[in-house]
Length: 275
Image (cartoon, rainbow, N blue to C red; front, side, top):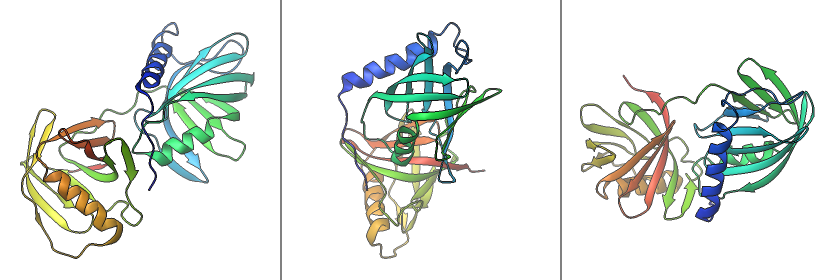
């Protein structure tokens, strides 16, 4: 499991303001091209392709490019959770060189995507432009796919299957242990119930949603012995559900459930809508 410490809040605020200014202050906010070469504007990240594997981007993953002097530009963005800045030089109409600048280091649920994005968006990249799209390619064939279309709307809490992908305690977020990936999942139904798998055992319970609070009743579960990573996730999720009202927040396809006042939480990703 990987963990990251929280970065000072001041830098988080600076980067957030920088991204907002770039997205809203480029003379209309419509993505386009820099004079003579390159591209500019605010773009959503659709996906990364690394070693032939496609990684879907979190809804918050963005890249904004503000033209500077000559062929230079300033980039700000979000890796999906952490903000970043970079200096950009458009070497030609089809190439750019990126020099990373400052970035935040908050604990984030989708560490593989964050790490891959940070690694790809640096050095010399090939630029391919299409209608509403920009593709950035690294020398090893890795790809950052950008689009001018807005990110998909947030998934609904109810009638969505959620798959747990990280555990949070205080200021530390950890990806689920090896062997437990994709096993803990649950659905809050419109009939006032929640059911799924805790990581090893199946469960069901009553559930009440009031505003941004979710309250889960006593769990009814199967009784298989659970060890290793699945058992660890099951214990964490059982404790969270039994801790009282939970604060819930959905951003794009990512859900965070937090025990009120304790800082203990899990994050989960929307898998599919349930009829």
